[in-house]
Image: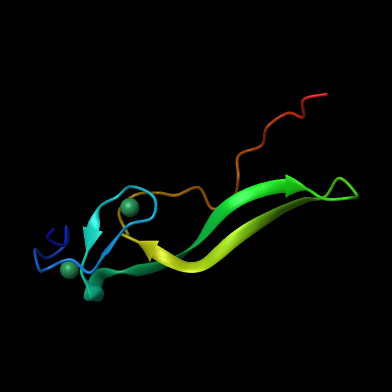
Length: 70
Ligand SMILES: [Zn+2]
Ligand SMILES: [Zn+2]
């Protein structure tokens, strides 16, 4: 796999789109694993800080709202 930015040997894969990036072009981004509603109906999310991001794709910074299913 080659880095999509410079063509060097890739070191990691973007968490969101799967593009390969080398050490120089890895960008950190917070990765949201899952979202759940806590005891007081407050949404909470499990996140990984500094996950590998390619810098090209556009991850949503926050979960997209979904209506509650009763
Ligand atoms: Zn690169
Ligand atoms: Zn990406």
